Picture 1 (cartoon, rainbow, N blue to C red):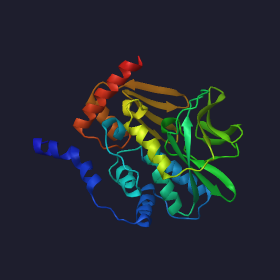
Picture 2 (cartoon, rainbow, N blue to C red):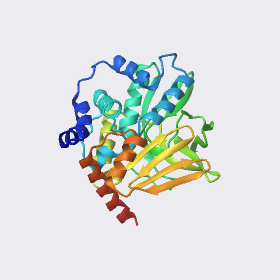
Picture 3 (spheres, one colour):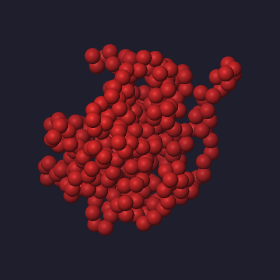
Picture 4 (cartoon, one colour):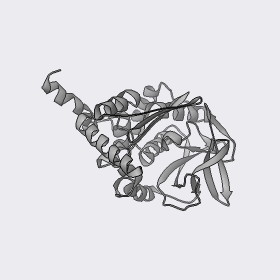
Length: 294
C-alpha cells in the first residue's frame, strides 16, 4: 500500500461523520431496518425483540468517543451518523437515545427513564444510565441496548417475568416500593446491575448525565475502554486490553499486545472504525488504566 493510501484510508470514517444524511427520521429509520434485515410491522413484542436482538449484535457498545475526548451531541441526526453511519459505537446515552427515537418512529409507546448503576451494591450513585420503557398492550418492558456486555438482548418485562437471552437470564425486581432493579442471573443468584424509579425525566436530565459520563475526569468511560457485542451464542467484550469471548461453556480471554492488534479486534470483531493514531491513543490509555486497576 502506498504511503498516500495508508494516510488516507484510516480517516474515511471522519468523512462519514461529516457527510450529509437525510434530515428525515422516517427515511433514516427505514434505512436502519434495512441494515438489520427487518421490515416495519405492527409494534408488538416480537418486533421489539427482533430490533433489540439484531441491534446489539450489529452495532457495538463502545466508550471510544469519551476516551478520545470527542464531542458527542445527543440529537437524533448526530447519533444516527455516529453509531449507524460512521460505526463509532456509543454508550447508554447514545445507544438508548437513538433507540428511543427509532422505536417511537416505528409506532411504539415509549418513555424515557434514568437509572443508577450499582453492580449489586447497596449504594446510591448518580443518574448515569439511560433506559427506555415500552408499553405494549398494557404490559411495560425495559428496552436497553446500552449496558454493554452485561445488558439484555431482549425486552425485559417490568412485572418480574424472567427473560432468557440464549444462555443468560434477566428479570426486573421491585426491591423497595417504586424502586426497580434490573437483574441478571449470576452463579445461581440474581445480581442487580442498576436500579431505577418511574419518575419524570426529560432530555435536560440526559444532558446532565451524559456530560458527566463523557467529560468528568473521574467518569469510568473517560478512563476505560469498554466495547461489546451481544451475539446469539456468545458475548464479545473488550475492557482496556482484555478481550473476552463469553460463552455458556466458559470464557475465552486474551490480552491485546499492540495498538495494531487492538485495531484489528475493534474493526473485525466489533465493526468499529478507528484510525491508527486513535488506536495508539486508545491502547496507551487502556494500558494506563490497567496499571491503575492493578
